[in-house]
Length: 119
Image (tube, rainbow, N blue to C red):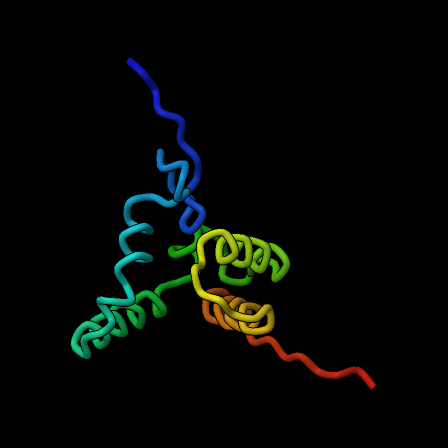
């Protein structure tokens, strides 16, 4: 029997044999079909309902860690930016990409980032 090489999915970490996309089936489906799916108001409401349900669950059950053990910003940005730079076909500025990453970090890790200019 031939064993296929697996790697962790770059989005969820589940094992995948798709070495090109580096995404498992579920993540590939969501990431390639979500935009067209969200073109319908009923679909948007459904996704919001699911996200609200997920948001109300504990961080430990979602992420396998205690709620107060937030992934470091550096680790999160490294993973997010690496993935976006490898897979994105959109042309956006570095600032826009960083803003997206920080917004995603805040919502995923349930933290608030404040950036202040130092005098």
